[in-house]
Length: 116
Image 1 (spheres, helix red, strand yellow):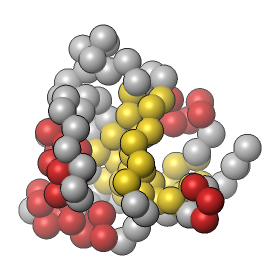
Image 2 (cartoon, rainbow, N blue to C red):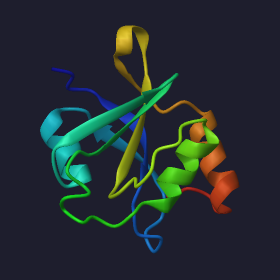
Image 3 (cartoon, rainbow, N blue to C red):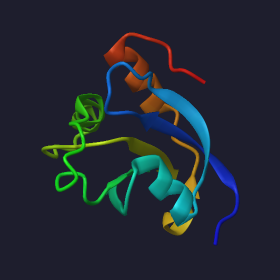
Image 4 (cartoon, one colour):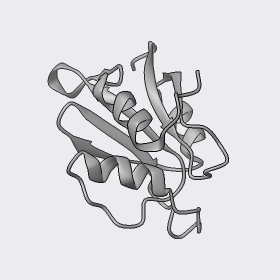
């Protein structure tokens, strides 16, 4: 188990909550707590995003910002719900810090600096 922490881009579903950079543990219980339930992961190039696998059944709110960010990176998925936790992908699929281009893109898209 990986006990280190990594810099993640956390995109809450609520537009009232800021998008933020955060140090996160990548053990399953910590990630499940962040997304409020069981995990699913979507992989795209040098990053991946953790989402709640039961978000539709739990009627979590739609996460328009995470959906838009993913769309701008070439990934179109309908109905992204709940908090999205973006991390980087290291060698052999290992966890890594979020690649620099994603936070910059989020700031450009949403017009505000990210919360720390």
